[in-house]
Length: 320
Image 1 (spheres, rainbow, N blue to C red):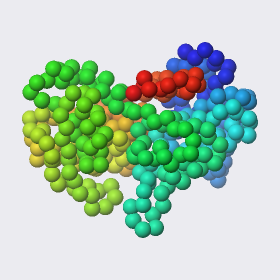
Image 2 (tube, rainbow, N blue to C red):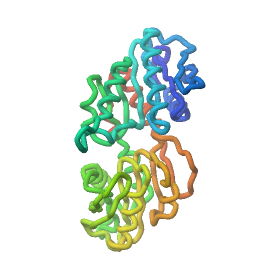
Image 3 (cartoon, rainbow, N blue to C red):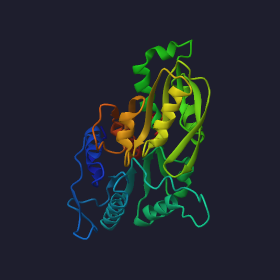
Image 4 (tube, rainbow, N blue to C red):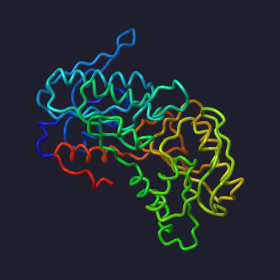
């Protein structure tokens, strides 16, 4: 519990209010009072109903679906706090939308994640706190400090408790699998932490949100596989990878985990009909359709500890 609660304020938009409430419970403070609404034409309207003058303000808002509404709410909240003379404004963005648009894939493409970074800075944010950006280099898009939390420790704790035998596994019956080549570094780091070997699903993507599995690099035959990624959107790529692990690689069973459950379109149906035994997410994006196969871990306490460190001007290295 923080020592000087009168100097800190936590507010939330409409993206994930329960997440913000849990953060406040962990910090031992009340959630800030604010009306965050929309006019009939869709314009965001923010009214702070308590003073923030000189306070250390943390605005909790994931830019998940509806992405543009939630992003605009955050920008207006930042502006409201700045104009109300807040001492410092930290945008707490558990899931950072537009992160996949981090480069020009073809001529005349925008780099939208850089644009969003500029917008947050121009609105008046002094600091950003987020988790598992789709690409680490997005940290460099910001001209203000950014604290980048990792979801891996939460998954490591979960799987070490679920599969304690993996720690003493000399037959290598467990393997972490990267669903594509681009996620290899992330999956390798996770595999080292859970003391498992690594395999890679090599695939070709003909067009957006459509993937075709080509090959499996590594030995998964007869093994329990854990697919690890940073986010799942339509779940097509992940489910195809899981299917290939079983049908092509001969895996015994497949589990999957990802930090952000975007879960657009047919994602839930695909996961339900897939060979994946359990799909694990962190609650950076709120659960929309409860499912027996889909499970969420609460990382609000992790964000609460990070906020405590930021407020106290101490290192957050112990969170890694």
